[in-house]
Amino acid sequence: MSRYLKSIWKCRYFWISLVQMDLRNRYRRSLLGLGWSLLHPIAMTAVLCTVFSKVFGQDPFEYAPSLLVGLCFWNFITTSTKDGCQCLFQGEKYIRQFPAPMAIYPLRTVLGASFHFLVAMLVVLVLRFSFKGFGGLASLLSLGPTLMLLLVLGWSLAVLAAFSTAHFPDVLHLSEVGLQILFYATPIIYPANVLQQRGLGWLIDYNPLASYLHLLREPLLAGHWPEFNMILTAEMSTVFMACAAMLTLARCEKRIIFQL
Amino acid sequence: MTSIDLNDVSLVFRVRQNRRVALKDFIVNRMFLRSVNPFMEIRALQNINLQIREGDRLGVIGHNGAGKSTLLKLLGGIYPPSGGRLKVRGVVSSLFDLSLGFEPEASGWENIAYRGYLQGETPHSLRDKMADIAEFSELGDFLNGPVRHYSNGMLVRLAFAVATAIEPEILLVDEVLSAGDMAFQKKARKRMEDMIATARLIVMVSHDMQSLLKFCNRALWLDHGQIQMIGKPLDVIAAYTEAMNSPTIPLPAAA
Image (cartoon, rainbow over all chains, first blue to last red):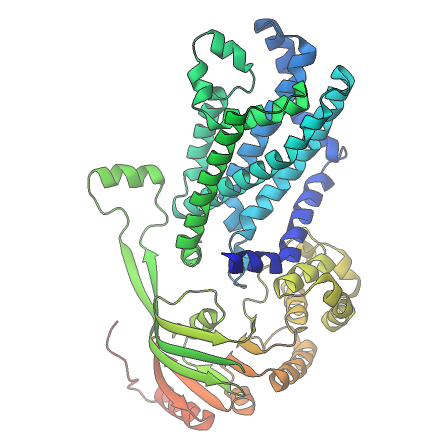
């Protein structure tokens, strides 16, 4: 295990420069640069906020940042999974020439996705400071561990997606369907309390993704520390996914080249 | 001390008759207990016993599909052995599939860096070598442009320049002496000779018997994934050429 981590660290310059290249290629194609990747979630937030703040009876100034956090979180999850499906094929030319640890290819995907996520979170912070002032700043400290959890979660998703796609080509399509269903089962566009009022609270209680959203929204938007049981749920889900990813790596890493 | 030990090593490719099966087909077919996608086993390497010691320059010969490149990739850690024990002591550098592995959108300089890092360079160590690599490749201003505009020959030049900028311990070479145009080939040959002189252990695959005779002190003849003969280059090459010229080529038992 520590030897494996060391081998990932040893080729850090390689995967770091690939992440840099991915980001550069993405922004090079657009005039707006960084703003381009923010345009989609912000436009979606604007549209959804106009409609659903009325439907759910929410204050638009509360609802918009919450929506933006939800959409960006979701974007991170889908990008990690869907780009994760392709990451081994994307790195195939290197895999065929150099025996580097396979974990770096999903890592490349997730670090790219994390960058976009972080930029979006900065926008959320600006919104929060301008709408709600500077109360509850200390609770922002909890975001550090939360982001680590998200990074591990994204990497695990990418590993699992990558190795299953290498065996079955339709995993990308199936995961798109699955993610679409999960999107509506997660309190992204609707506030959590709306479900609880209508007796659908169990949907949130049994959905671990809701706990990550709680961990993000409470400190970012309300200035509160997250609830303990939510932290525990998020941690346990992350550990579970990470274990699944590491088992997959341990079992399949050496032989995956025969599937590419 | 560098060494490579192969103890009864074999490598079996399990090739599927159809390409990859969709997960939904897999699940549906499993429910009806049908074999989804029968495997076809290809024994690429069989019962290879081989000791390579420090100072050895081993040349590998054999006809196409005999398993020469597969053997190199196994030694380089790209393929895991299906059976037997493989032990490699020393840092391996490999020269194969040279024109693969470029990022088409990135510039020549950036691609030098990516490959360099993958070979274990650091930004610091690479800085000293960058100019040398650029000069050796003779690509000049082309290095500033994206690699997608390069010709195949230019790609090979670039790859060769990066790959040979290392000081290897164990060097695995797969048929790269024929890289580039005439002028470059001459240069590449010189560079290879230098590397062969400094590397502590070399395994090279080539169809060029002259260079094998020149560079190697041992030779290995592979046939259908099995060792046919191993010994002094002159003897092995003589036996190999004779077998190729004689009408009855000794065929091993069908795999």
